[in-house]
Length: 434
Image 1 (tube, rainbow, N blue to C red):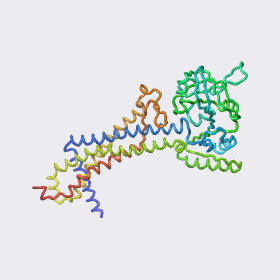
Image 2: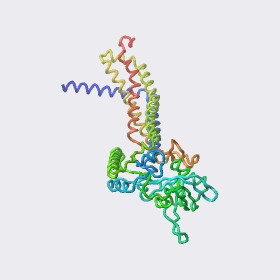
Image 3: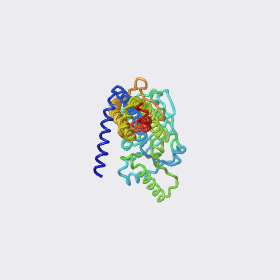
């Protein structure tokens, strides 16, 4: 048994040695093949890194900048933005007490009319608690001008409060709003009265999402309650967690807690808990479509590059038919001959994989650090599928995707070399040696 294993090991080692020597008999052809495969792999790695960067920005937008990983609403509010469809404050406080590791941020919404000097426009009011919002999203850090201040202005000359607000980028541009401008807001309060208030613009946001950029005004919950006379709850509860892998479990647990609270308090109006993929199905579909496109395009790119491997193997077999005939005449098995030719393809694939990975990683690292600067053409970024992208498009290196790309290249190139290599099994020594 040991003798048989030793003989087999010796034969395989000999085939390895011969295959390696044969690989460099035509250095130019081997170098061109390695360049084609390695270059194709490097291009695929760069493409995947840029696409991963776009997907990461989509995910960050959905989970970190504006919406959080989950949201809780009354179903009536989701359906028609009902002003009175609020989540009671006792429920929100209960959820915060029972889940200390989860971050919550209540929000309120209303529509109204805004005026600055002679300009007026419809607007969307979004009210937040600045401290809690900062724990859930990074919205307040995305400022173009001014500061993220939503507090009341100290003044002894008025018998009413003037609060600071932050406005959307496009809204500020259309209304000619500057930091320090006075904004008058008129709406219909929850008690049926006319809601009106004077606010100071303390900051202007960078583009975040198209609708809010065009019409959005951000204020504190306290100022919203004074303006709209709505004190019994919040329209939305944004949620952030530390580990995305726990998202399904956390969603199920929060749903169960809300159902239990409703049962105890005889609250029959439906409350829904949705994760960010359910809140933004278009974004989720775009991410999944991008992943599928990556695989398809990667298969095409590597497939085209593998044509070089196919050509190299065909030429190698054609040029060495006489040598193969001699080996077969000396008693070498046909399948051992096939294995020797395949070893050559394995060596080329390994070298190409190393070369392509190093080249692709170098380019991806540079794009991750510096990105593609489009600010000269789109200073505010660009809108794609309802998402505002930064004007600097950065790559994101995902080593799992790089490994998959290298394995895809390896197997496709081996498959391409196997087709012509199979011809060695059909070689007949008498015909080859003529």
